[in-house]
Image (cartoon, rainbow, N blue to C red):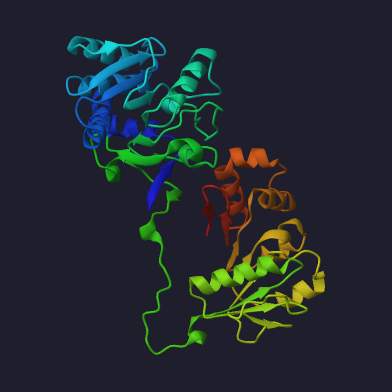
Length: 392
């Protein structure tokens, strides 16, 4: 599990104040991290173009060019003249060792985006826009320095955002790299240390990136068992029974011992691995409903199905019904809306009346708002990057 942060300036400041590390030291470590990655992946003599902006992201790129110079054919492409004190310092160092500039974006082996980093705001101006468009067309291995240029702090992306094969981010992971829109641009992501390990650099965070090692699969270690030892899921079959079948089959594949589909008549092509009944079995241990629900059930029928304290998974159609408010008062509930359904749920719960676009631009924000109001509910917001939230 890895922590995610809205910003890292405060983490940098901690390095200055608590550990005595200067901005220059942090920058050298950042540049060294990128240089080490390039040295491990590409042979000496490979051609490298570093596209630099005027701020500290550009300064990172200038430091990188200096470190690679001599072993690699390195050129700097200036999109803007250096303005920040660190950028001016790094350009002097790069020029002193003999790094040359180029005024053309030609084919190369490696292209490094050091234009904006986390400082990007709004949209590209014409000159930068043209540069990014040209860069994205080049046949090169593309590395984003810290974050692809064009991704703003809240994760919104310009239509011409730099498309990276690899994002080498500094110090810690940024939430902005994990929006649905950003997924198109970040490529693979690796965190570089800045002079201290991440355990010292990072602080507390309410957000984490789940790793494969965080997944606890339901392995069946005991030998003296049978199918009833591994739970009995009851799925309410609705108007579109295919959705309910898929949910039941998924549960079986993941390790559930028994799955029964409850619906008014047996569906066509009912899988042999699933059971069918007209009412909820007495030995049910968990419920799932909403998927393909449609208008097959009235409020009294739904209340009867839910008149218990069983763990509950809720999806799909229920998020557009007022009955969902009763469900949100329960404990042991997991809800799995996609963006359109979540927008409907936010409206019904009077948390927010927003568009799907507004939600997608602020998925973290509205997930937090929902979890604050309903701390006992586990939210799984579907998307290119799934958000799992709980405020218990």
